[in-house]
Structure formats: C-alpha cells, structure tokens
Length: 448
Image (cartoon, rainbow, N blue to C red; front, side, top):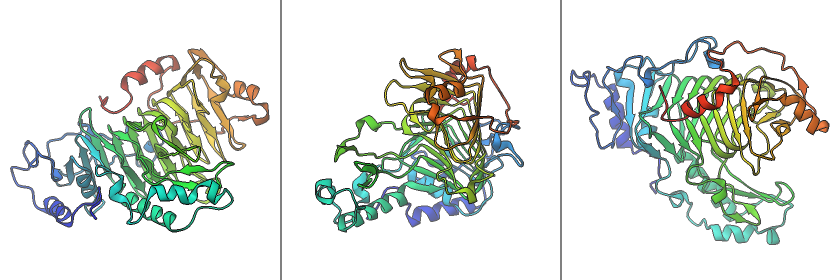
C-alpha cells in the first residue's frame, strides 16, 4: 500500500544523482528551478548571498543557541546541497541525502504529509466502530489498559502514520520557508541527536493523530491520548527556531468529537525540547489556539539526561489563546523575556509551569488577560523550584507574578530567585512595547 510521505526509490535515487553530479555552467548561473511543476527537489544557483533568509545565521548573543560555536545551520551549503521542495515526498528526500555537510532546504508552498487521508495508514482489519464497541467502559471498565485485536490493529495503524509523517532533520541544516505562504501540514520534524539546525518562516499545522489510544486508567473517567508534535528537539544542540507559526489550523480542539464522554484528543504538543537537548533559541514565533503547547523536559525522572542541559531562550514570541505549557519546564535554565501572552477567557490553566529542578527566568513579558482571569494563574507550581520574575506587565500594568500567585495559591507557594542571570540577550525591549512589536513581526511570512 502506498502511504503519504514515503518517497519512491526512483525519486530518491534521482535526487541523489542530481546532488552528487558536477554543476554545469547553466546550474551555476541565476535561473528558475529546473522543475517548475515541483515534482522533484532541485538545486539552486550559487547566487544566494549571506543576506538571503536561507543563508542567515543566529546573531551573536541571541539566546542560548549562540553559546559556544553558535548556530549557523546550512548557511555555508554549496549550490549542490541547496534544495527547493514543493511536496512532502521531496522534502523527506532532500533531508535524506547522505552526509552532514551543510544543506539548505527551501520550502515553497504548503507540504501536506497526510494528503491521502487517515485511511492510507489503516492496518487491514482495523475498524474504529469495532474499537469503540470493544473498549466501551460499560463493557471493558476502567481498571485495566486496553488490549486485544482491535488495539493491536490500532497500534499498527499508528505506526504506519508515524513512519509517514515523521522526518529526521540532519546536522548542519537550514529549513526555510520561501515567501509568505510556506508551511507543513500534518508533519512532525524530528531534530534528534544532531547539532546546528535552523528552522525559519514556516506555518506548521499540528499533526492530527488518526489513531488516538483510549486509556481507561487515565484519571477517574479515562482519556484519549494522542501522539505527534509539530517539532521535537530531542538530544540536540544549537537549534534556532525563528519566525514560525505553530497552529492547529483547520482542526482546533473545539472541532474534535467526543467518545465515552471524553474529547477524542488528536493533538499532542506544538514544540517539545526534551531528553538532553540543549542550547536552543526560540524567537519571533506564533503559538496559537492550542492546549498543551511547549514542553521543556518531559519527565521528572530524566535527570540523568536533562540535568545541566535544557538551556532554552524564548523571546519575542506570541502565545495566543494557549491553554497551558507556555512553557512547562523541568531541569532547564530557561530565559523567557519579551514575549506576549494573549490569554483566552475560557479554559485557561497557566502559562509558566514550574517543574522538577527548573530554573526559569521570566522578565519583561506582556500579558493580556481576558476579563475574569486572575494574574495569579500565570505561574503554576508542579514541583518545588525557584523562579525569577521581574518587570512583567499584565494588561498594561506592572505586576509581581510571584506575589500574586502566592497570594492566590498559598498552599502552592513558589520560591523566588532562580539562581542565575541571563547574559545571552541580543535585543531587549521595554515590556510596554512588546505587544506591538510581536504583533507586527512574529510568525511566518514576516522575515525582514
């Protein structure tokens, strides 16, 4: 069965040959890509200078990703390792070209990782109606995890989807959207165990899990659990994520059905930085209309990999109508400054989650809270850890986030002073200017 996202051997071989063959004089001069229809990845002429978005490197002192060797991605790529892609298959092929030498992948238009629909991933014999009948709590109960033929087929279907929509990003790579309408729908970028990656100017519509698992033991009434984040930084270093828009797009949580009285949750997170990842800068992005949005550290028991790592800078990002995890932090030294949080009037849980051994510094941010949302909810204590907050505005007025949290939740009081002072900040704006700046400049299609 052909599944969306799998590249044919012929297509992959043709791409490798195109990359490894010597450039001709015609290829080395300014010209339109050889494949205007977008049926194959193509090399670009070597005329793109350092000022072009795909050749950009992270500025000195611009957050944790500037530490040490800095982050240059594929800026030094020769013309033979610059690819323009217009389909998900070609995107996967461009990233699969062997070697860790610098590469640039230019995304034109929207790449759809699931254009064939969920049916393309279904294992023979899987039937959702049969799944619902088999694990109905009135039949199965709440005492044990689901098992049996339909669960096995669901798991096999989920594996097929994961293989089709996940793509590994190699070291020394820049992925850059071209123009105002570049993006990826339903795909999951896996930045795993590599160094020196840049992702810019993409609208990333969250993957829709076709096969969530019912877990009757999750809470008192069970829950549907889903997989797939738009982007995962796992065990990687020197990663710059800039001017992207993360969104649920055509499938917001409000559009999802319910089964067994629980929302059929088909979304996971938008961005995860986990398992020993380190030196990451997340700047000028939009995170919109999502529940569990940004997690830094995914387990209290991951100290062996995460302690003294997970150093992440978040600046000039817009978090709009985000319910929670903006971010939730474990272990890491996280610097969150000059971000704008637009908080909805329904369902809001918190913005900054203070977790296991976290060291969050949150300064000079702006919060626009809906009427009736108390500022004390901005911080959430998951585990005892110190936090530094200073010069933050709530609805235009200075507010001590720690003081209002501790007053509202005295049984969950947080400690002051994260114990470190950020030094890698290239640009710091007064918090009163942040909503206007971020509103005008953050997100995909707004590179300058």
